[in-house]
Length: 201
Image (cartoon, rainbow, N blue to C red; front, side, top):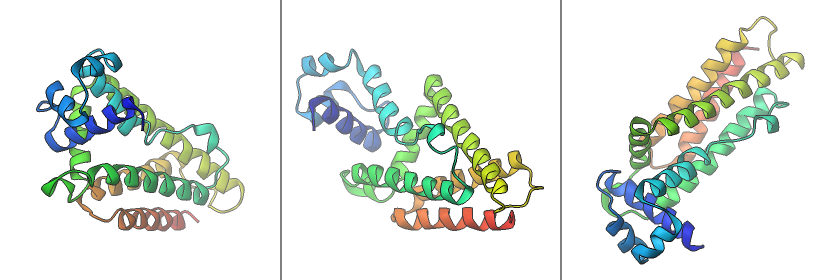
């Protein structure tokens, strides 16, 4: 792991444990074992570092290229979504598990930090909205592809169905914060999506 990666990971660890306002450069120095000068070599200030952390662990972890999924059916996109969430939960759980005490009991810290970022950073909100739009577009593609293959009824409302499928995904992701087992959350997501899709047949 290179120095920049260490800084990002340790900073996220601190943010999960203490929240945005409580983490100082001194905390990051202590957590990384690096000098203040070296920290500033990689990041101009604390805010720039925090922005990079949120970009890496809250946006890139979920973002994807729509063109890679625009030929998927609803079943293929469901599988893709579940794999994406499985990978995200593993990445987050690996970091959360390094925290001490009650902080490592669930993904609650990650979700709490996510909402802190949403509240304070308009650029982050816009990027997250863009990710949501991508997922909605992908569900619409998947629904159309499945209709053309005869897997679903032709009379379904594609826009409403895409919104419902996204809402299921978002809701179960929110519920995962109370779970200590990411596998259960992923299975719940898969079952919920497939159940809804069956209603469209």
